[in-house]
Image (cartoon, rainbow, N blue to C red):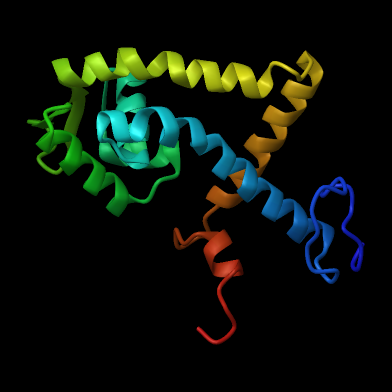
Length: 177
């Protein structure tokens, strides 16, 4: 498929003619991700002074009720350092409560504060609106197929080798590293 825009582009934009179909599709996925963030940036981020990672953490804690940072990192795919920063910011603004686990001193339980629960109740319908808008034009089989594909891709990206290293990061490491 090299040298052609391919079906992933659907003739709406041009990329370098030497891009393969897989590379074009990757760029389309990145565009999809960016477009999905527009309602958050437009309607929530500035109004509630919350970053995207803080929002994701708040929504995950709200859905789970109580969780730990490493669980949120695993569920969302956000790296531990970004989760740690989001935890600090949410705690500083009184949106979450952080409690040390008495049975495991290294573990900290995260739960929503009263303010966090208020924000969760405000933001959850916006998340549902975005999801409905995105998927409402897909029929049940298309949605199931898409969900299956997304799960397979996430499993591939989450795979680790015998030493616990990310197979994805090891496989995509630049040759000069």
